[in-house]
Image 1 (cartoon, helix red, strand yellow):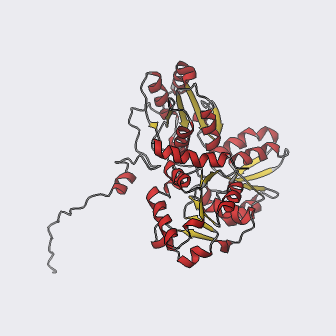
Image 2 (tube, helix red, strand yellow):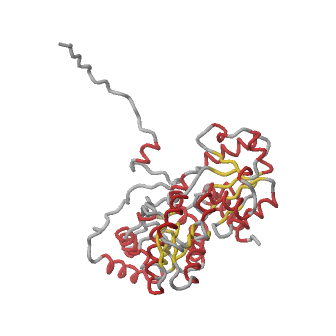
Image 3 (cartoon, rainbow, N blue to C red):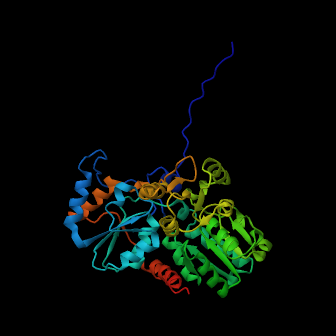
Length: 397
């Protein structure tokens, strides 16, 4: 028989990193899109009185509260929104309601930050669940972008580069953009933002969504794929040589939307075979090959307007977040418009879906009782530079 030796277990002095604690939900990073569990006692999601409780709390607050609902929110939440829209439209709507003491943003963290930047100092922006973040926005941190700028400086091209940051970015990234002479863009005005940027410099650093940057440059502006390089913040020098950086026109950050990035060319081909005569309509955050194969490409608002104008009996496969697609399918069913999700495997935006009715009820009832919860507040220096970048966008021709 073989002798079996039992080794005594050794205690390892291993300390969890801040990132590990963050991912486990045991730590918070106020400068990150990631959040932690709600600090309050949530009502049960099975509470049959949730809808009435939300109505009562909202009625008690009256004009003191203004509820914003992003298009990707759950139906149970969107019913209580005073206005709906995309992130920038909602932030502007909030700024247009100075009498509202509380802005309850049913969306994600970067959206609430933008609302805080654009609203008055006496207004307080509330995010019902601090864990409602954005994976794309998390793919570019202030430290990573500062290191990227150092790489561009060492390559001798920083003075030629104009940063353009997508609205779906943190306040820190918007502030970086403002400090370095750049502008913000939305999926609706990305072409105009890039036209402006190339009038200011020879190259663009596009943050944080590589797909929107690539699709706008190649599809809308006639550049080639060879004009674009991808900067990977997890590799030395972004994984690029100085020569590659000098030759590029578009330096794309290696970021993406986890929902729009899931659609593939196979998704497009499969739906065309399954539904003859279908129109494929996708968001420009989708991969380049998906956008190239689609019939129509545009922002969330463009998608809604296209379906509003579509003839009765038309068929549509939509490449965007499932809550919106399902809501549009129900809305236009009476007009005999067939609307399906582009991918056969359905997928919600997991972080958008964190804002549910229990969180909304908890936030509204807390405010009605005079307790301010989950306030999103951007520091003044960051706000000033972020607002500068946003104002450049608003001034675009």
